[in-house]
Length: 217
Length: 217
DNA sequence: CAAGTGAATGTTTTGTTGAATATTTACTCG
DNA sequence: CGAGTAAATATTCAACAAAACATTCACTTG
Image (cartoon, rainbow over the protein chains, first blue to last red):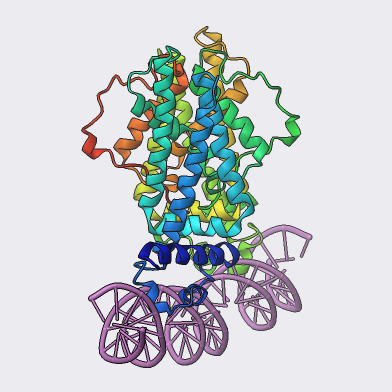
């Protein structure tokens, strides 16, 4: 039997194909409906509107990404610091690759962030919860002694904002982003006292150090 | 005698008045020229184009802001840590107020950042130099022992990106921005070991803690 | 009545065209 | 020539009509 959820699933699937292939703007409700062998009007019995379809798709994708990150956290035999590092790098790589290579997904992300500001917040909250988990584990193991884990997670998220949706904030090569994340994390973990941003890994030749560039203003 | 630089100065002055009063877009080259008692065509003997006039004005303003920040650094009887803190807060307040209350300046900033990506970089470089100064002074006084001062300054700049042009990155109240900057700085200065983001100042009621919201995507 | 239709409706996007306006050029003046 | 002008040109903007589209609704259909 075709329960409501199955139809919803079909719609999402069809829409996802179109959105990722042709882009959000270039996809019409009529097309999505046709792909599902229904009339445009009927779509509205399953979703309030086009944007909600996109949001549902993005939520799914976002939660999938969070799941992947959660797996990074489950890796055994790592210290809390290492875990934090793994987590941040995995996160950056995940979103960078996603947005770098897929113009369409980038478009959707932009539209949804504009029209549904709360969307990004929900994902950020999930993300922050994982950070809190790491910190709490670190506390438990005696590696950290953080008083307010939730607040500290918030601050970590704030300081690494730039690496979360790199394309939205600056245009840097992935190499450079990695190097910067490395440095910032070192600072966040150890503070200024421990030799500043600590430069274990020798930097590449100075020539390649293009300056930062703000973007999307 | 009317040397070339005097005329340039007059043009800049006239343009500045118009730009700040009516906005960049709503100001025409003809108007600027009229204010200077010259024909529009003649402006091009002094500036390559309208955008370059705006850029010159902004550069001046940017350098003025940097000077103000430099003064904050000169305040006597402060430790390097305090200086760093003063500096970051002064910087945030300066740009926040500027952009918050002056729609026209905000417009100019946006246009120039879009059309002349290098502009922001030059200002950021000046800014970074001041950070390096603080760190170097901290090293000299024995308060820090930072190996690569320049690199560490870069990392500090990176981690506080969000507070540099707040309106461009997120929409948060100034209160909340201050609180976040406080937390992030604590983390950057002391690392995770020192009780995390350290919460000397009790946070306000949880109700008021609206989550972050990305903006301008 | 739940599922669906397709025409009707209002909003957004798209094109187009004329007007503004940035920029260039050919020229004047001292 | 250096400083400037004013007309010529090219680009951008604004307004408005047409088309496309999202959304709604009165109406099947099983």
